[in-house]
Image 1 (cartoon, rainbow over the protein chains, first blue to last red):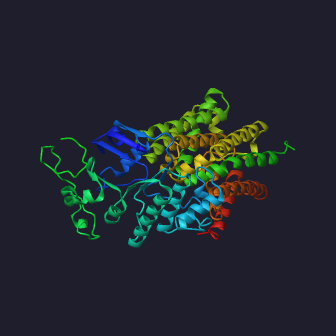
Image 2 (cartoon, rainbow over the protein chains, first blue to last red):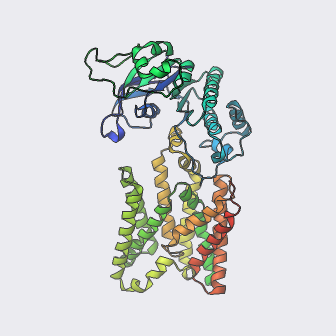
Image 3 (cartoon, each protein chain N blue to C red):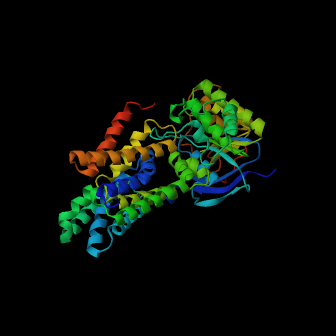
Length: 255
Length: 260
């Protein structure tokens, strides 16, 4: 099966200055696959997403998207100014007008039916994330890209949101690419997990990754099944001496 | 009919609010208030240049306002803070304009008209310029409306839809330059941003969508123009400031009905 997006040897730095945020990252996602990117703050998760979508300039490497690929995107931390009046209905018609019945169906699908006339800025965090997801579903996407979609949700809200995403995938067959901090839930919902820290630390199935020494070192608390804070060994050794650090299965970067 | 200075003033003011209603809404949504202010200040340099070169005022102010928009876009694109760039450019241009104006004898007495506007002195030619400029800006905004609104809501969402936020930002800056150029004769450099911001701010309170806010802002602006001219005639107050004062009054009233 061919991939929806395939990136080879990506290196990206902010404005071409300073140390690269991403170095030599290979990535691909296939149809109907749920792939989650995990990693500490500043590990380049959002930059990877934006590079895959073509929103940032690459220092080197290549991103190939399947021709005509339809992407539904939920960016991180969408903030809408209170100064801007915007109903949910109007928001769904940006930038392409959609029919009333399609808008209503999308809202119903994501569990927020009948919100059309509410002001966007008056929604709760959970409602707003569902409206963003509804908007992303409007163009019948082959790939959903969700950058920390459960930010600001409480624990039941997070579980419900991932359940919704799995349902959507099952119904539409869309692939899902997510960035997430909610390790435990994500590990259950994903087909493949990519652990990022400027480069790909380890990747593979949740089972394989969770068995990997690197994963256990990075996510010690959670690998014991707790919902404790997600901790990452930020300064783990990268001196590229053979045996200097361990990789999980599927690790791609060379020594 | 056009022989009457009051009719000409009303026509000029109504022409202007056609553009300032929708554009002022964008100024509020995108927090570009300081940008409008700065462009208006810089336009004084355009007035001085026009007098020095014996060119039409509208061309001089338009050229300086457009140049300002391009320089701001360039410098902020290189990572300079918007606030800083505007502060430097606005005050430098205003100072240069005032220094330049001191070399133009005919301007030393008349600069007040460009700082505070003189809507009662607009000619038929002015009305043509104003309606032409306003129609241009309004047409531009309507043509790109969906893209402009999307980019104003969220730049990431806009980029994902294939919209270049930097381009839409530049288009708004250029539209603002045109409005400043046409408004400088009417309300003057100091009150232009008031005409952009106050009616739109008043419209926010009872608008549910961007379109309704833009439309209401235009309507409130029109009421302010007519009310301000009427007040100016009855109370013998300066016309430009009276128009802004009426807008402010409407804003205060709408605060009471702000819908959360």
